[in-house]
Length: 314
Image (cartoon, rainbow, N blue to C red):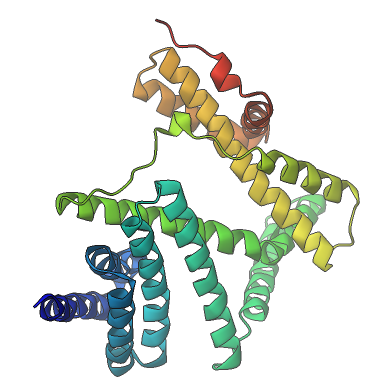
């Protein structure tokens, strides 16, 4: 009886996934949001049953995707299915929200790298080369515009150097995209499953976030590598700049937790905090100092736990 119920529910969930899949394929606006909606059927079905049932559902949806979307459909289902299976299993095991975020981020990262490999091997598309070509074209167009508008040649060269860095930062963009997508998928899953009255873990308040101290040591290693001045374009250079950028972003997040904790102690209103954050980013667009100060707060907090030294008023 139970097996019949699981199969019937699997057929219904497969139909729901097919509907979402077709909407993502043929409705441009919906395709923007499909990346964090498509894993939801897998998450809910696996959470209600078990890993074996979730894998069976994934296998069924591969056939549907191939029938309606061909190779691109297979890639989409591979992407959404793996993320949904990982998140659903972690939810079922009652793991924390951070554990789910880590698992989903790794799944998304694997999916993105797999998509690049499939594009290279099956379609003959070198994603990195295509990206470099597009940026070189954009740089040439922008350079002509700057010259025609009478800009300082030194400013043009500075812009070219910054633009040429973008393809080298591809690992940072991929990792950042994987984490952001995992975070949005978790929010969507939690909203839906909360309405279904399932107990899904939530993140603690942002002010209470504390990253592992090991990130501080990784950052020190990144700084040492930066001072070693590796040759531009080499593998060591690409690793160094991406490691430095990722860890800088992580430390900035930790720094903002200190600001939010201080605001909580002082009972600041939400509008005041939002205005402060907007002001920091506006000032940083002119001089890259405010976010460096925030990053410094993050470094101090990881090293000396200053949030624990800030005591709320009794």
